[in-house]
Image (cartoon, rainbow, N blue to C red; front, top):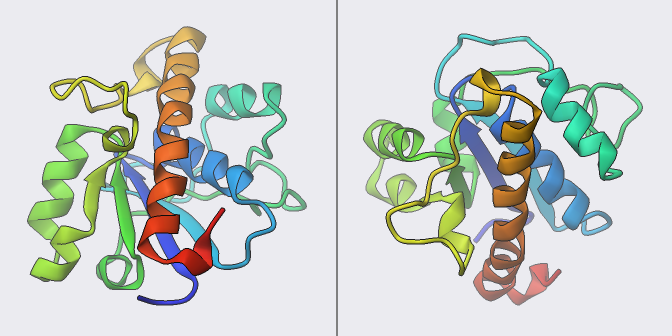
Length: 172
């Protein structure tokens, strides 16, 4: 296992769900230097773009730095596509929806990298087995971003527990 423990969250364009998950996880582990969190997309569609303003608003309403200001703890978010090195450099690759999960497993360069890919909602004990994805809020309104937040938030305790179980030095 590498130190620090590295997590990357992945959605389609890296402007809604995955940066929300990244920033929410960073907030949850604030002060723990043994954990690094990043995000990326499966496409280049939004490359270089900031977090969607609606996603940023949901985070700001809850006191979570939203990645829109360079002086925020998360730095300035810019969308990017996942790179081959991300599969190797990260210990846990969290897909936001089933299509991301399938894409990541298909494009993982090795069986070990493929084994790192999990759906984020697998860490939510209340999630139903057939409903492990988080729908893309980009096409909807503020309520869709609220729902994405709620689903990500429900998975965070399980992710933190997983990190601690993976290596007690990362206990959060």
